[in-house]
Image 1 (tube, rainbow, N blue to C red):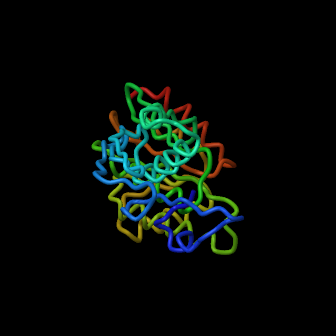
Image 2: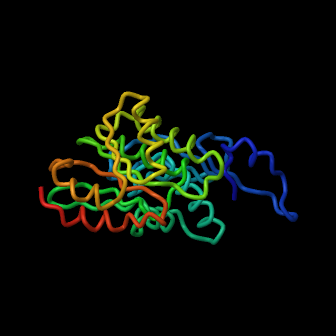
Length: 236
């Protein structure tokens, strides 16, 4: 089961005697989606077509990329003999795990806990999700590890992407994230840089405002779970 919108995967004709099935956003795929509608941070709605059948579904995790995940899951379900109703119910019952695009609402903040891990592609996708928020948008971004010799340029690119998404405040934490901050400043964004988590947390109460949507994203080695736990308890 392969992404039919990927220019390389779509060229796969057979794998060990098995003909692949494809999913994507165009009608030429075995499973495709249309009528895609953002529900802000509450999720994304769409219509999924499986062969001759189709159904409307609300995916309870925001982000355009979640439509692809739902399509892949729908094809798997179909192959395993699930009914359309079972597939729809399974998608709509999706619950994120801690650190993986997990939305946490407190009396003070709406926190997008995506701190389990990070690379440039996933961080840019998370910033795209944050951009869907209706309220003030704050990105707390940490270092991304194991990126090789281009790590500085890749961090810089993430900062530029954050600036293009009109994030209201970009908070960068860590040594490598100084490059993220520089990339965001290159895009004329509102940027703060802190050397450590503790430096940021000591200022969080003055930096953040009641009602903010706050993305927390970094490589797992940065242990940003501590930031999420502190923000959950923050009273503004």
